[in-house]
Image (cartoon, rainbow, N blue to C red):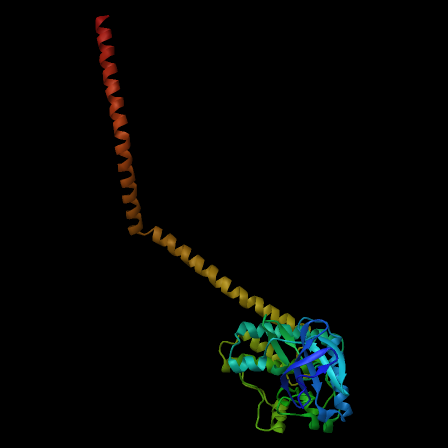
Length: 350
């Protein structure tokens, strides 16, 4: 049942933004602070599922504990007729899933997004939170180009049977989305920060190539591919992918967590170095062009054609100057002649 038009605490519900298997998200007006917020309301069908309710509330607590510019801000956790409601920042942008569909991302954007998400994950991991559901639909870019990571605080599970029940191929899963799981997540193993990094590697792979590396026709086949298959290199699918980015993605997608990046901070550092190197490359090319241009100018200046032109120019200048100087020279000569005549006459009379 839609809650549009209802009032939840001081929030007047304006419209539905989206919904999934776990919750519905609405835009609402905060009548006390005069701002618009997003309300995430748990699905009525999950109210009797204590685990689902606990995880929903854990999401709010986890995100509220993380003060980071690349993590969607949670303002409070409230209730409406016994249903938990998360009040959070309203984002006016689009998810990466939409950006991939539109094909609107450049390679520089991909690297910037990777840096921002890695920084957000670093903040979360340092406080002991593992996201467990990194995927394009949980990463948004707002109208100012700022990256925001959503849906934090999903609980880890060691129970394989529970994991199978949670898998949802329609991107609405509670415990993770199968196409973006790590190998250890598909096995139901205990998870740590490196599981999130594997999932981020899948996201970066898709952003770079517009293809998912492990997609298969069924969930079980996809999980098997995640555990055993090495995907095609990003550069074979998109030659514009920088070689260093391909190496970073390959390290993120290592099957053994021990061979992956060991922290989001290390990943962020490598992506930042890659960004700087790519920014420096055009400047180096520009300096090379300037040097080539300078060499060309010197060569041109030394060519016979240019030297002849310069000689003609100098000749013309001196000719014009001669016309200005000639009257003064003639006057000086006449003065000397007259002075000589006067002197001769004076000496003759003496």
